[in-house]
Image (tube, rainbow, N blue to C red):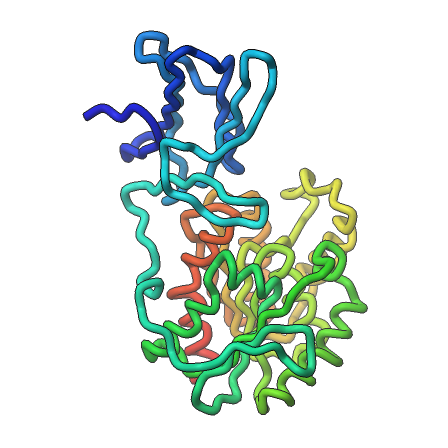
Length: 337
């Protein structure tokens, strides 16, 4: 049966269709971070708008539709013909699953016993396993990681399945992430001199922590590790904002762009570094892919035990969620063996 609405992927192309029986719209555009804003074409015989684009190197496509009404009014909506949705900090998006996409299996595994609570020593939310543990994973943008990428569910399911040792999961919030996560020395000092020592003391953890983050949060975790390397046993960095002039001039309007550029340059030029096991992931259709490849290569040359993985997705929470296993799983097993 021919599809009358929604989105599908036939292996060669991604296809989108929006019914408009009375042609009440004067235009429809796809809104997608890596496909741009391609225009739909109206098919008067079938009375629908349609778009067909070559399939990108991604297993999922998050998108919205921008509708232009006859009176010139514009609105951006989710695709009513496609029930699948993906969460995000700017609201839900429609999502197209390509034929080879698979959700992580841990979404369907039972959780380990444990408790969530607010930390006494810092502004953070903590999950602790039912059994004693001195292992700690500290995460930038922690509440969003948990809300949109289901990091808490990953942690409890992975511990229950015996895939990783029991550990404390610390979710650090970011009240002003554009400032604190952009090579801010005051933040790095507060994190390493106050927050992490207080948290590890409260949790009874003697070992250095594993630090994680995505985008600017990943960048800031690397910045903190270079600032106080003795506090970190490993790094898990997803789609880090490791801006370089030659790759990322489109980001130059960001207020702290130059500060990020300076720090990245210092890291890339360093002859050696305080190496720890580090896993970097980045989506195959991201603008950040080139600078992540460069950072992974530089850290490897400086003595970090680097694993670099390209996941077939974009710069979004579900892409980061889907890369947690096996990549974070493998890193935690390596660090905590």
